[in-house]
Image (tube, rainbow, N blue to C red; front, side, top):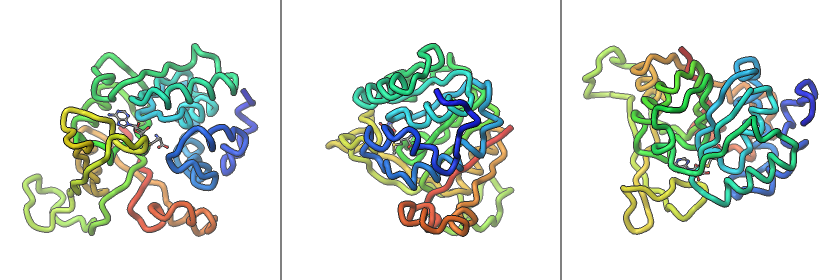
Length: 256
Ligand SMILES: C[S@@+](CC[C@H](N)C(=O)[O-])C[C@H]1O[C@@H](n2cnc3c(N)ncnc32)[C@H](O)[C@@H]1O
């Protein structure tokens, strides 16, 4: 594995191009490299020497990037066997020692059963592929993590902070979760679960303020990457990142 000092954050995946081939889920160089800046490079200090859980680890792109940034150990959780296999092949190909990671095939709600502990949890591209948002945060809190990175679509409603101190708020309540269905045969989407009917399961896209509200409930403060400033520096990135550019996807940092 290359020395950590050799990371060129803006172009990280150009040095590891297998990840452009091992997934059908937005594997575009500009997008992956820009996300690397927000997810990994921004948190390099917090990852160094730490135990990490990578929820929805997919083809191992973020498990690998966290290890490359100096994480001591990463547990990746991913239900789809072909993606676990792709991750294992890439991590082996790029020379990562197998004692630094574990790839668990399964549903995060089965795997995060209270027995896994971590310093940092990555929840990337998954928080809008579940309807069990609060339960997931509860399980993440129980890992002991002090930093949680949530990269997710968010409901683009007005995030006006009216009445945020009222837990029973009725009108102008910004803590909204949009209901959607995911086709479970698509590798980008939720896996089949107990709520699946006719090939689709129920999921929800929470607003930023809904995430802030739930995070606060479980004792976390919330901060976010400034994608607006990012696109001012690197306007070409916006072409592959319309969701972040238009404000309906965000990279959030929960700390405690
Ligand atoms: C949009 S992709 C995100 C991939 C990667 N984490 C990223 O952000 O680039 C969603 C991933 O969630 C996985 N997934 C779906 N349901 C899951 C579940 N119940 N538990 C864990 N992972 C799940 C999918 O198989 C897929 O790999």
